[in-house]
Length: 132
Image 1 (cartoon, rainbow, N blue to C red):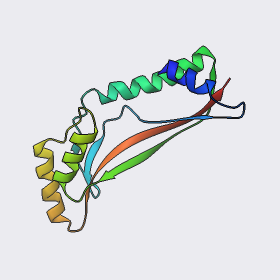
Image 2 (tube, helix red, strand yellow):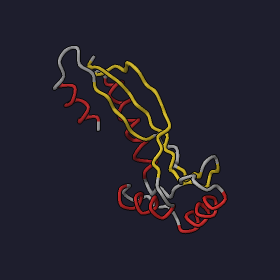
Image 3 (tube, one colour):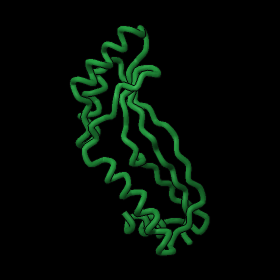
Image 4 (cartoon, rainbow, N blue to C red):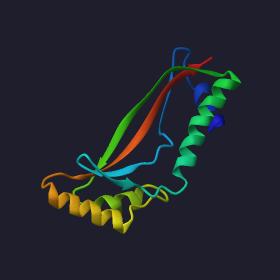
């Protein structure tokens, strides 16, 4: 990723910025309302996300970029049902899965709170940096 950042900076005008957005290494979790159902089986995602953060640090250490701003925020992915959300995660998140036991717990929680939809919470980091 350091090479990609170097190339991206090469395309910028002198006043340009690069914005990187990626999940943090924190495990994503399944929720229904305020109830935490449990973590998502994320496979190697935390390692990949931490590597992306490390690449930005490496680019700064190499001196070809400097960070202007870093912020973290919660990002939610909602589904109409626990099954739909599990299917979406399986189809769109590399190795990540919501296990059948978690789907069952979410379904039960939804029955206890009509109208509340299941969601997956990810912690996401956004970094704005400029060529040095």
